[in-house]
Length: 255
Image (tube, rainbow, N blue to C red; front, side, top):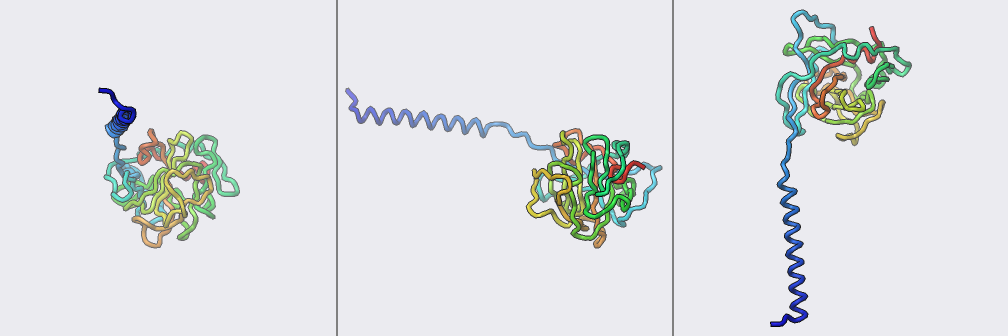
């Protein structure tokens, strides 16, 4: 039986529609069937357990100010396991004279020209609390920079803000990947708040205000200061664990 022109057009349209529907189904199936590799969960405290022979140096902060590591979700607290192990001499050999604006001019990347990360603080006001004892048998692995509440916290170097995290110990914290290969982490803790509009992924320029000094986390109320920590990581995706570097000689000059 002959098919009329109208029936022929309808038949062709039905075939094209069926083919298009089959293509959409196939592409959707391929997309949603792709395996998803989840990110490894973070772990650990950034402070290490001191050796029996180590002695605690004076600390301007009477309470512990440890680094609490981020989880992949904003609210849950991370599980505890060892994180950055101490490597205080890793970059201490790169120290040099401080300039008038409070920077420490160093000869090696990625920490050349590291800026004191609290506005108005001079190099001679810094104290080396890197090896100071903290609660639960930990070592500080950072320095505390004392300043009034809401003093601007400055990016110590150029680098991407990789994590904004609320920690039980560190309080309001910020992680910045500072080197070109993003294998150096700058960690800022006990913040009062972040700078307006700051978001993860923002590339902060050296000297840019990224947050404000506070006493969040387990800092003693009223003991406003910045907990500032530097460490190297083998993999930037695991930015919460690495080998600690003493910030003091980089900011103050080699002793």
